[in-house]
Image (cartoon, rainbow, N blue to C red; front, top):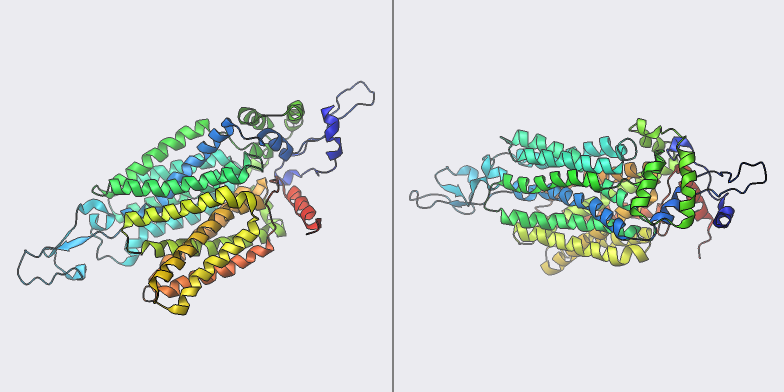
Length: 543
């Protein structure tokens, strides 16, 4: 019998406690007969065995679901970088024929000129600066919308981080976050002043922060370990398409009002978040974890290909799990409580957050450096997107399937940091070499950015995965708050700011040696299961 082939695996998986939210991740023995004779028993199945048996082979349904789950991050990236175009400093020109003896020149301070001596070039409503006459406002006022957006990201990440692991789930949090972001961005187009505009940008930041994380976690949990890296990379390609499409839309609407760009990006995001909610399936891992096996099995049947043994065990899975109450979803912060009870989980989370902070410093810092290569704003954004695309393709086609996560992160952090520090040795001379090193630093930072998301997903079990990934992303966003300040300080000496970025990612990258390797490992669902896997990996002798 097929069940006898699995009998030797009965003692390999320890049952997980309900405290950790893994209800039904191991299925106990169930008698085949009740006639009082020696009955044969069916072997237990773990959630990982069910997932691998159902989703281990890629099919068209899984590809469609992967596409649906990866669409919304495109709108996330659009709203993250839309201020590059809408909040930019508008161009102006002198009106020399107004009167003889005008002091207006191209190098004049616009705030020291009278209104009759200059005028905006093109449409006055092209950006918020010219639309609301903020040309002489303080740097704080001009940067308030962008600052409000990232502050909203920080708040939203800490508030919404655990909802994806508890009450809302991956799919609902993904669609709700995109819906909130899109509605706030749509309302931003009708802002009467910069104060209302900044409040709406703050709300958009609160909504968008969970989109990418929920999408990537959902992608990783609905495929077998063989395809996990390749499927998650689809999400990174979606981020790249967000940058490219934003640059294209900004160029096409360059002669229109800044509000037009908000309308062109928010309306599609609103429509897609509604439609995808009805066609996207929830993570079967999360459904099993929440004690909802019937829904999990329906998802597996709709998108997976069940083998004979798994199919024969599904009635037993349902019979066992239907009697287990689901308590994990009643407390929206239950995953956070689970996380802080384990020292290894806290230590692992701190390391990933520090590492993410270092990567964020170099990633956002070098983006500003490449933007100052003398190209116009549209070409600069397109160039950045293409550079990120090349790193995604390299990660997707080669790095994730073949290379270790830990050594890859360490290597790219070292190269990126060195490329940021080396220009100090020759100052402002050899401009070509300086630019080349900037590109190397940015490319390596993009590679770490890609691999790190995959690494964090694999480091934590299902019951706290969304929470841990969200907090790690918050550390990356925290770095984006400090980068503009360092860039301003380094304007008198650009090498200074780049050296700070290089030293930060270099030192933070060294901490990765304290993390375990995850390449080829199955995704765990409970804390005890994760601890058992780490213990087994530590006992394996290294060749």
